[in-house]
Image (cartoon, rainbow, N blue to C red; front, side, top):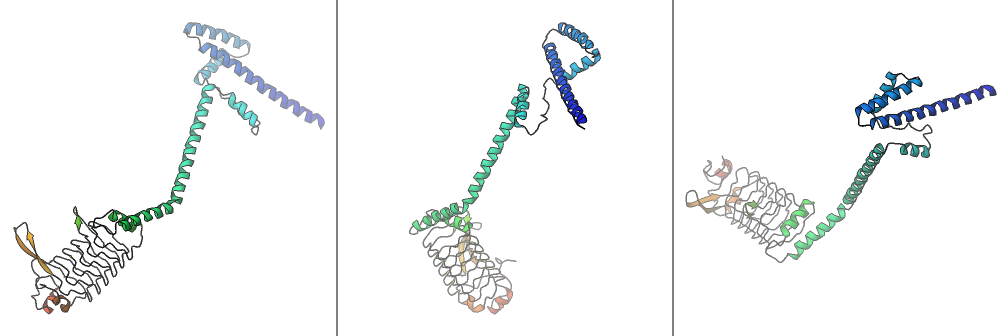
Length: 353
């Protein structure tokens, strides 16, 4: 048994010796080929190669095999060392890398460096993004504080004083603006769609059009909001909650109330020429002394023209409500309501078809 084990060990040592011998011969061959390739004169190079072929024949290599080895060398002059047999040894891997040709070694180092830098940048970017989103609530809170500071500091000013942008930013972030007071302020062109504006006060304020940009409170909640004596011509109040809102003495020429809820709203003495109420809920809406029709200058005809509110399609509107208003006879009504008002059921020319 011990004899067989000894034979196996000897065989292993012989294989290892042959392997190392082969590596040494290949290394010697590579050095000879390198000398030949560095000869610039073709004739001299071929002469030296012929001498090497004769020398190779003495070692048992044919001239054809020797030339084939030379061609293989020319195709890939760079030699990549064989992988370490003891793959778990760090020293072996270091030596393996050091035996690389300089060109390949530099290329590998460059690739590793670039990859590390790229991953480092990605990691830094990921950390930055994480911090950005983590601190987002704090930044938003600070932005809201600054917006409220602008609104409060401009409370006694007639001009906007930055309030339009501040209010729009707060509304965009879904901040509830209940009980807001912006009386006597110029907020023309403001956009507060879907705003939470219950119990707000816009008394004597200006919310008209600014540079063809009209104010819009569409779909907002304006429950019990006050627009007393405000100038609101062409304002967009479509689909808005205006329950118990106060528009007394407000200028509402060409205002859009389509599908709004004006239950118990107060429009006493409000100016309503060309206001649109299609689909609006006008149950118990107060129109006492409201101005339903008015005269404007028509540039196309260079003459005065009468324009009136449009109540066609309005909901829960009674003759008593209309008759409490002023100059209501030429306004636009549904045929049934026109009969109850003692008017001809056919629509005036300026009404919707």
